[in-house]
Length: 51
Image (cartoon, rainbow, N blue to C red; front, side, top):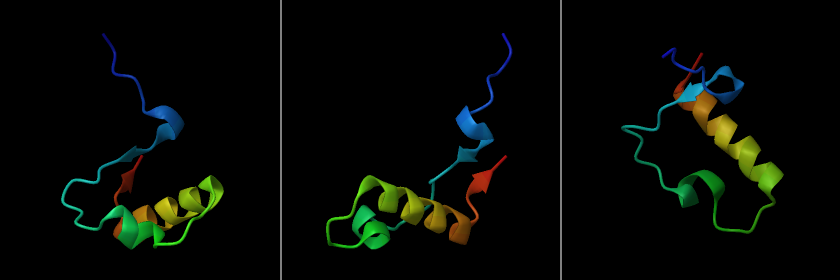
C-alpha cells in the first residue's frame, strides 16, 4: 500500500520542542487566524517543517 503524502505537503514534527502553547500564543485571547500565523511563525523559526 503506497504511503499518502501529508495534507498540504508538509510534515511537521514537534518532537523535542519544549515550548508550551502559552509560550507560542501568549496569554491573551486571539482569533483562530492569528493562532495559525503564530504556529507557522514558530514552525519556520525552529525549522521543523519538511516537505
